[in-house]
Length: 130
Image (cartoon, rainbow, N blue to C red):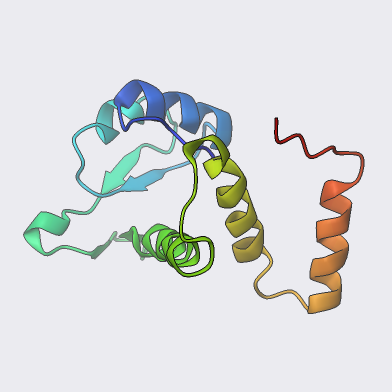
């Protein structure tokens, strides 16, 4: 998870380089910064045009190009912030995003295993708020 200060091609390119494997295919909507932000990925860049009413398109091999999963994850984050935390400071936004990333990644795991994974994730780490 990366929080970017503003959505520019340079900021997105840096975040993608840190988080996404170079052979990945990047799938986005039609925002104009994505083509230059995704240059250099071996899998290329594919997009859907929400402005034209296109929300999913299929390639010949059956690969579905859509942003539905990303939009669903982001809606869970927004709902959590509005419904649970009410207000989040930009200084700590990355922590909230990481929490929701963990929740989403472990949504199909039993409670006990999720607890074990959480404890393993904090082992040896110090929470520094200042």
